[in-house]
Length: 193
Image (tube, rainbow, N blue to C red; front, side, top):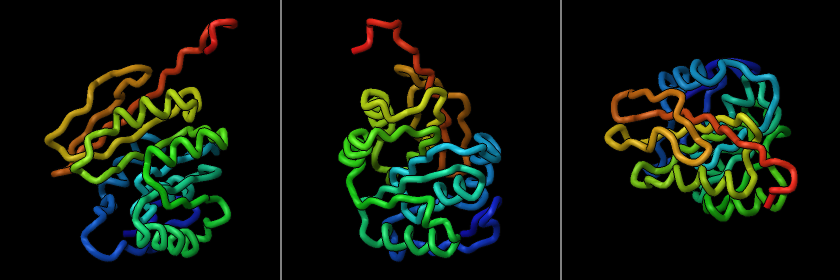
C-alpha cells in the first residue's frame, strides 16, 4: 500500500497487523480518486472507519486541507498516526479512537462540516445509509458534500434516499464503491428547525 498521488506520492503506508482490517487496494483507491477528484482545492475530509488511514491520507495528499480519522481499534489508531507521520501530514489531521455514531455526535458538538466522507466499515455492517442520514441530521455535511461508501459487492444501498443521490456505482471483485452526492436543500428563512 502506498500513497498514489499528490504531495505524499510514493510513500508506503503501514498495514494494521492481523485480519481485522481490509485496506482499500491501490487499484480501487486509484479508481475512487479518478471518480471524485482526482485533486482537491482544500476542504475537510472524514475517514470514519479509518483502518490504516489510507483513504483520508490520499485525500490530504491530493489537496484537502484537513482530515479527521476515526476508528474503534487501538492498533488502527496507532497505524493511522504512524502513516500520517511517515507522510508528513500529521499537522493536518485529527485522530480519534471512538465508535462511529458516538464520534459523529462529538464532531457535531465541535461544529465540524465535511466536504468529503469515506465510509468503509467492516463488510458485515450494512448501516452506511443510516450513518449518512445521521450526518445530515447533525449538520456535519457541507453543501454539495460527497460521501463514498465501500461495501461488499453482493449488497446494494438505495440509489437515492433523503438528500443523497448515488452518482456512481462500481464493482471491483468483492468490493463495491458507491459515490453519493449530498443535495442539501436550504430551508426558506423562518422555517429552520
